[in-house]
Image 1: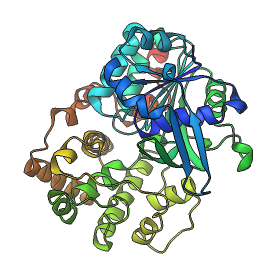
Image 2 (image 1 turned 180 degrees about the vertical axis):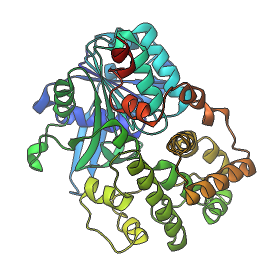
Image 3 (image 1 turned 180 degrees about the horizontal axis):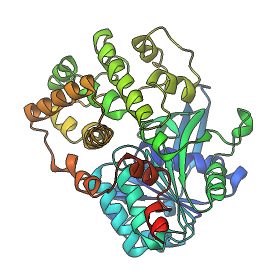
Image 4 (image 1 turned 60 degrees about the vertical axis):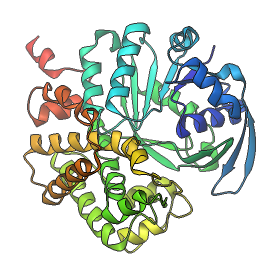
Length: 402
C-alpha cells in the first residue's frame, strides 16, 4: 500500500502524483490518488492518465510519466478507506470549499485512526484555517497527529487531457501544527527531493512560518473574486469569452483597486502581529521573477507562468472555486477584521460590491457562510485567536486553569 495518499483529482493532485512518480528514484515513496468522485466516475476520468506528458513551462523539458490503474481510486470506496488507514502521509488538494472541507474532516475523524499521521493541506490557510485549528484543539485523537498547512499549490499547473503544463515553485510558506514539527517538515521535504538543483533542502523550498502568518498569505478573495466579478470581465463571461485570469483579466484601473485591497490585507495582518508580504513580493518569492514598477506591471510579467483561463459562462462561474472557495475566505477576513477592531474602508466597499454582484448573478450560496457558525464559537479575544492559529495542540486556558 502507498506511503502517500493524495485526496483530490484536480490539477494539483494529478500533478503531484505524476511528480512523485517521476522523482521516485530519489525518495522511494509510493503514492495513490483518491477522488471525491464515485468509483465509476473516477475510473472514467482516469483512463487518460495512465500515461501523462509533463511539460516544464520554464525549462521547456518534457517527460513522460506512466501511472498504473491501481494508483487511482475513490475516497468513498473500501479500497480508498484501506489506503487512508495505511498511508503515513495524507495530502489534501481539494479546494477549501466549506461543505467539502467539513465533509472530509468528518469522514477522516469517523473512519481513520489519524494518530501519528502527517496531514498536509494544500491551500491550508485563510477561509477554513481557524475552523481547522479548532478541529485539532477539540479532538483528543489528533494530539499525536501532525498537520501541515501550505500557503498555496507547490506548482503553477494546468492539466489538459493527458498533458500537464507546470512550473515547480521555488519557495512556499508552510505552517506546522505538530507535537513533532521537525519530523513533519522532513516528511514534507522528502516528497520534493530535487532541492539540490536550487541549493535548498527541497524544491519547492519549504519556509516555515507561524499559523497566523500563513492565514494572510493567500489572497484569492482579492485576486480571484476581484477579477472574476469585475464588470468588464463579467461582460466577457456573459458573452462566453474566456480570458487569461491573471493577465488579461487585470486592467490598469482594476490593478489600482486590487493593490489597495492587498495593502489593507497586509495592514490587517500586521495589526494582529503577523508577517505578510504584498502580492508582488509573493510572486517574486515563489517564482523568482524580477520586481516591476507597479502591481499591474508585476501581473503582466507573469504571462509565462499564469495560464489559468476564466470561466466561460455565468453558470460555470457560479460553480467555480473562484466563488465557492474565495468568497468564504472573504467572510473569514471580515470576521478577523471585526475581531481586531480594524477599519478597512477599501475592503468594506469591495465586500459590498461582491455581495451585490453575487445577488445580481443569482450566485448566492449557503456554502459561502458555512464557516461562520464555527468562527463564532471561537471564544476569547484577539490574543486567544492568535494562540489558536499558532498552537492548536496547546490550549493555554486549560493549562492555566490546571
